Structures are given as C-alpha cells and as structure tokens.
Amino acid sequence: MTRPTLILLPGMPLDAALWEHQTRHLADVAETRVADLTAHDSVGAMADSVLAGAPARFALGGLSMGGYVALEILRRAPERVERVALLDTSARPDSPEQTANRRDAVALARKGKYRQVMRAGLARLVHPDRLGDQGLVDAVLAQMDRVGVEGYAREQTAIMTRPDSRPGLGTIRCPTLVLCGREDALTPPVLHEEMAGAIPGARLVLIEQCGHLSAMEQPQAVTALLRDWLLRG
Image 1 (tube, rainbow, N blue to C red):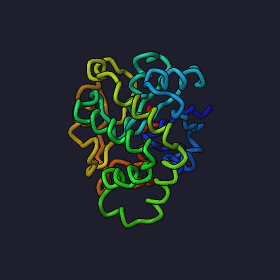
Image 2 (cartoon, rainbow, N blue to C red):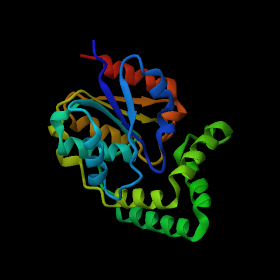
Image 3 (cartoon, rainbow, N blue to C red):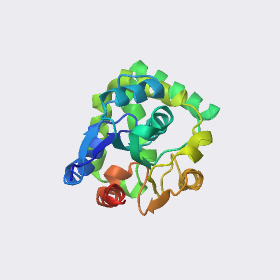
C-alpha cells in the first residue's frame, strides 16, 4: 500500500525541528514533509506555498500558526486534504490586545532584543515544569535563532491578519484530530473544545503535563496519536 503524504506545518517562530520526533517515527506509515512558512507574511500566501508544493491529495497537520495555515488550506482546497490534525491552535482571529502585544514584540526584536523577546515568550510556550529541561529549551531557542528577526516579523504579521476560521468549521468533512496540551497557556483547551464541537466527527484529545509545544514536550504521545489518526479508515 502506498504511504500517504503528511505535510506538517510549524508554529511561530519554529522550523522542521518542531516535528523531528514525528518525522522520524511516522516514516513507516507516511511520507512526511515539513513546510517552510518563514518567507511569507500572510496565512493566504503560506497556504498557497504549501499547496503549490503538495501532491494532489495529502494529510495535513499544523501546530499553533501551522493550524491557522491548515484551516486556510482547507478553505482554499478542501478536496485535496485527506485528513487534518489541529494542534495547540485556534480558529479565532487575533484580538486587539494580542495584536498590540505582537506589534510591541516585533518592535523590540527589531531593536536588537530578539533573543530577550524569545526568552520572555518561552515561559508561555512550554509547561512550567519543562523550563528546567535545558535540552528542550535549547532546541526551541535554536529554532527561533534560525527563523531570525525578519522571519519572526513576517510570521507575526501573518498571525495578526489571519481571518476568523470559525464560520467554516462546520464544512470540514475529512477525519479531524484536535489536540491540545492541557496546560497550554496560549491556546487553552476551551479553544480546542470550540473547534472540535464545530467540526463534524472531530476527535478531541488533551495531553497531560503539556503546554503549547506538544509535539516537542510530549513527542511520544503526539506521535502515537498522529499514527492512530493516519491509520484510521
């Protein structure tokens, strides 16, 4: 049997290393690719870039910003998505307060304080118990360094200007996994309950002892859930 193509979409400001465990351990059931979203400043342009390089049909997974892009891909080409996994994300648009905070963070980053902005944000990205895990912290910061200030600024712009995806959730017809760290401070479980409740037949899973970066914080659990989702009929 031909393995499906699984396209994974990183959050901001992260790269393929976010999905390293999943890419390695799902290779027997899927041809896994991780998209580079750093060159674009809108979720529409990000979605178009993914679609341009994707096969006719594929499975799709996105975490945080990657989830916003996954929902945009479903709006633009629902017939091409075989199944979708939405991890630690939201269907809602940015609030005015969130947008103001993002603009402030970008301004600081451009004034030479990018690393300080990244370290400050780290406390909200992972479970409090994981902040002492130097390996995890270093791996996250290394991704942020690779994305860089301008990539970060473009991705923040895309997030600030993303549309409200809630009206289209009821039209999603492919098998859908909605997954969230129980202690996700950025996109808490209530937002995932909202999405799962609106998408017909969606499966909602909360991962214990886990913050926003579930694919890295609890990689074995996330990989097992994605394997099950890929293999379900």
